[in-house]
Length: 185
Image 1 (tube, helix red, strand yellow):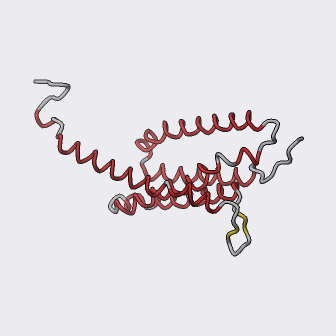
Image 2 (tube, one colour):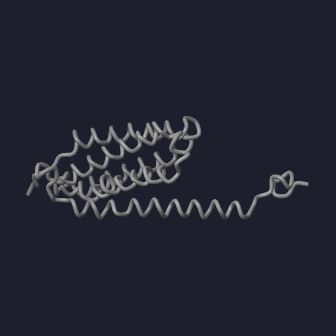
Image 3 (spheres, one colour):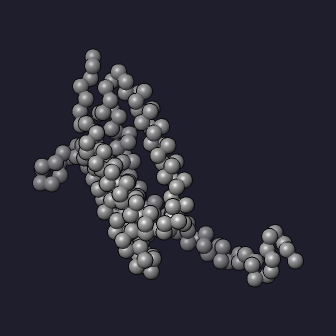
């Protein structure tokens, strides 16, 4: 007999297995969040300070560049060593969680800071809104494409692509984000 699309007892859903999967997913999500959240606070603590023996001032632009650079390295490591890392779940979650830490430390935190130092006072609110909308569209596109791309190309390849996107974002930040705007009073 067919009950709810299941053809036999062998295809029945195992409630304990489903619960175990839910607990494992919840645990991993909590672990990722615990790694990622401090990124915002580290960004706040570093902003305006000097680093590298007093040579580099931690501006929003530089913090964003650091975030993209470290995300690129971490995604590349995950992508290159994907097959090995699938057998070392704790290390995989730690590396993947670190990408979230540096996303929060870099681009996620500086998203709120850069418009105030990039755009002039006369057009700041309009361009900030346009920038925010473009960022949301990019996030929607990335979230929509990630799983289908992983199904087609494989998880390791998608991580390599994420590394490449981080490098492009680093270059765009370096070339296009200015550090100071003169207000037109």
